[in-house]
Image 1 (cartoon, rainbow, N blue to C red):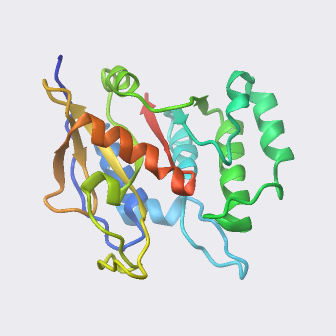
Image 2 (image 1 turned 30 degrees about the vertical axis):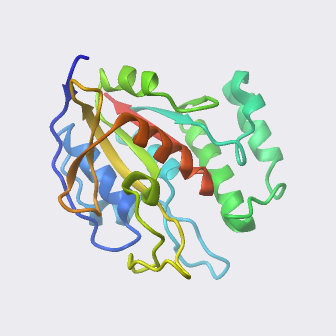
Length: 236
């Protein structure tokens, strides 16, 4: 297999909940855009909780912000709860209309009402900002290899699945009794000649790893737990 490995500047996330912003900082480094994690935290919108407080960004919001930087952004989603797979053939306007119609509708158990609507709105904002979105039934190695011919990818994964570790609490401490399986964001910055994926992980040390193809596919797929089984790619 043809090797495709890109240069990125690895960074570690400063807080337990800033993996996505840190991963985006890593991704932007490939394009010589020196945005720090703090820079991104300061400008990317966050979901507001019921009290109006910021409670974190989701990856669709990061993708939308990348459009404002002048990038063409393509997002691939494999979700089947916020997104309906029957929408795969819809045009952008019809897709936005269906997402808006679904507001306050089905509540994804793992997300709750507030976050279910936040995910819907984040997709709407991405599409209305000019993003390109593909709805597909499953992530495949073929798709990842094809995209890696053009540059690195920001992907959401299940941390437990990616590394074969137990559940943890909000402080990232192992807790097999009351912990949960968290989703996590990494940068896939290439593949080696054996088809393994090269990963820059903001949390797990050392920061760069090689992950076998099958495990990566399952880790992205398992992020369905919180409707995060998606990834995006940016290009100038």
